[in-house]
Length: 121
Image (cartoon, rainbow, N blue to C red; front, side):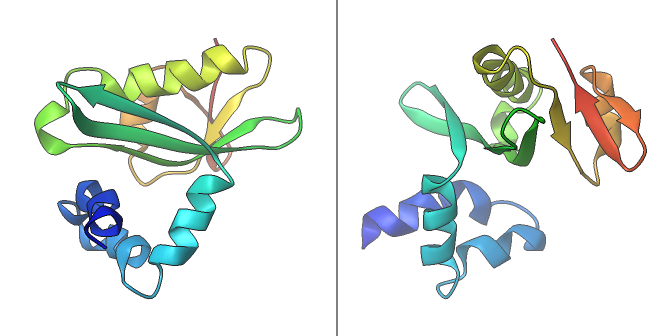
């Protein structure tokens, strides 16, 4: 049981919008979502300090669903490194994200295209 709770420790330090993922009722759904997603993690000094969760649209693009870096590791380019790790696995596919933090994604190279942001290597 402690292992399940630990899985969500990264989210619990975030804003209320993340609580929908780690509520007791939604934890099994989110674990299933992770298992059915492309997920890369960032580990520093044996600490899970960030992760990215994506879906592949069968050659039409990779959609970033979640990108989260622990607060004390922000500013170390871990988010960018996670994005680049996905881009390196799928070098011919654009990465897409819909987000309420557009300035962050634009700063690291995403271009606004309508209501989504796109990133290509």
